[in-house]
Image 1 (cartoon, each protein chain N blue to C red):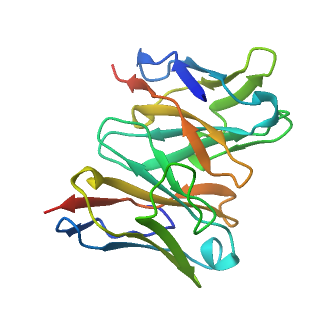
Image 2 (cartoon, helix red, strand yellow):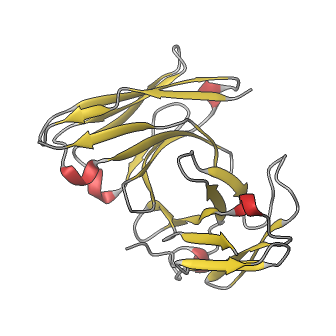
Length: 118
Length: 111
């Protein structure tokens, strides 16, 4: 059974940092591209970042370029999202996702809430 | 503002069919990039319903189907049920943005 478990969310002041983690099990993690998707209150889903299976390729949506960094540790079946210079508009539930070969998010974790507020 | 436009809401009675459109441009759907569809029930994670335009993952009933034509695509739900009340999102790749974009989302209400 595929399982994805996010952690690291919480309340942070504007300008602060957080690192989200997502630990995976039940599939060939080191062969799978992974993604972070978020949903802000009252808004729709937004793709945040994608990382290839071997971590050689990463992609970011424009609004987070330069202040979010995605990474992975295949020895720990874990991906990370380092979020710096956080802004109120980064407030959202962040979901970790496994990408299928067709680049569909075929499995999601339960999400972790990030609140950026003073 | 997403480059993939969906109607904000659709509704139907139990047992009826509803269709949700997803309109893109020549830099995403029109360029031949595949479309995926997701269902998000309140307070839960997104769930993949359709991948690569018209394929269902295992466990997804055949009441859900996808089709596309040109720069637009559609999700059809037949035999509408109360537990189909959710938000639905299309997703594709946009070559101009170099980004995996979601549609604006559609809330389905079962009357």
